[in-house]
Image (cartoon, rainbow, N blue to C red):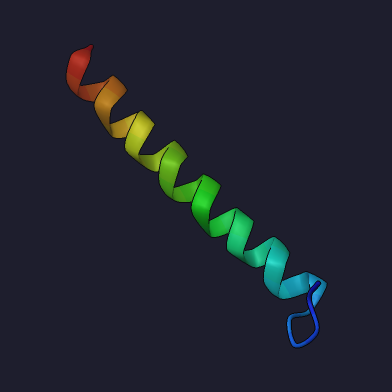
Length: 33
């Protein structure tokens, strides 16, 4: 499946995605409160 992609790169990608989503959610939560 992942021939030229290492496990570290996949984990880093997921960390960036979830970090971005969590950051946006935190900003929206602070605006609403």
